[in-house]
Structure formats: structure tokens, C-alpha cells
Image (cartoon, rainbow, N blue to C red; front, side, top):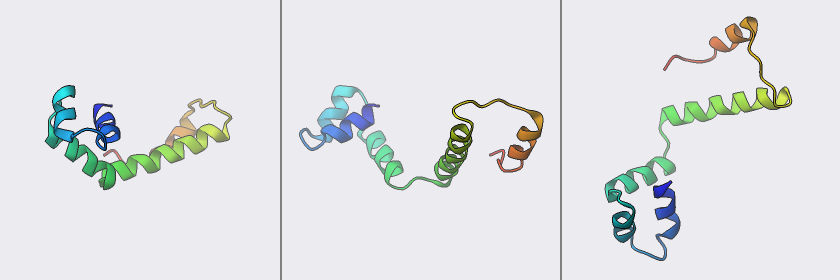
Length: 81
């Protein structure tokens, strides 16, 4: 949340000053910004999984219940990490 605020205000204030005021490291802000621009493989995998979950959620009109047959079908598509 802090890094997003710094990003939004960086056109009006210096990044160094904003980081000092919010108590975060500049290097942390720049690392966060880099991750936003170039997400890693785990972030891409999480986004794809979230899209699948959202599609099922919408398909069932906002209700998701768990049953073992459904869970076993999903388990084959999710890698343990």
C-alpha cells in the first residue's frame, strides 16, 4: 500500500522524500516497481489460477461449495509449488 502511494505521488514529490516520510527503503520501492512491471513466474501462475477460480465462482453465481469429485479434478491442475 505504501509503495503504491509513493508511485502515485512520485510526480509531485521526490521518491527519496516520500520513502523517508513513509518509513520504507528506496530500494524496496524500486524492487516493488520492478516486480509490477515484470512479474515473475510465480506471480503469473497465481494470476492464471485466480482467473480460473474467478471463472468457476461466476459460473456458480457467486457460490462455491466443495465436493470431493470436484476437488480431485482441480487437484490435477494445481501444482504444489
